[in-house]
Length: 191
Image 1: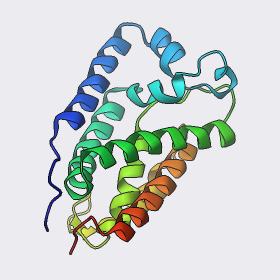
Image 2: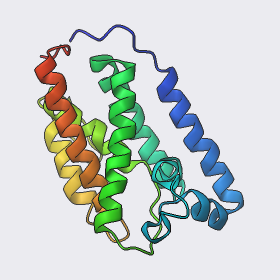
Image 3: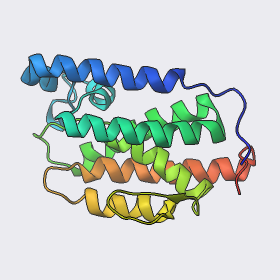
């Protein structure tokens, strides 16, 4: 597969680094971080920045580890295919659209945190651009097509209790649209 020139991992590492630093700060005072940086639909007018800042806040070590690991793999792959600017646009617009879905469809007084909507946007773009790419998903012992992993992951993970499936859905839909746009532009090279 031919990659896109002009992609470095610097922006990806910066996003991961900010997430880790904010996670460490969260360990010191979780309620303060969740209150000021987490997205609560009922308080959106008082704290509008949370539509973006909640992408950098996570609710536990496994939440941040899983999201950052997935961000690294999806982000580095998509970035090589479409370039750094397009990767960043899909990531942040996908996260914001995911949050809009959460605001419209989620519980008004709960607080949503995490980068999953943005990460599902990256996955959605990859589903369209390279759907047949084989990936390993723990604990499945054989490689499966990327599209099955991402769509299946969405269906399994999104409906666990306490998960903001609305943000996942919004991010995934934005990612699918971005993937179709990139594919139509033919600036992406795939198998």
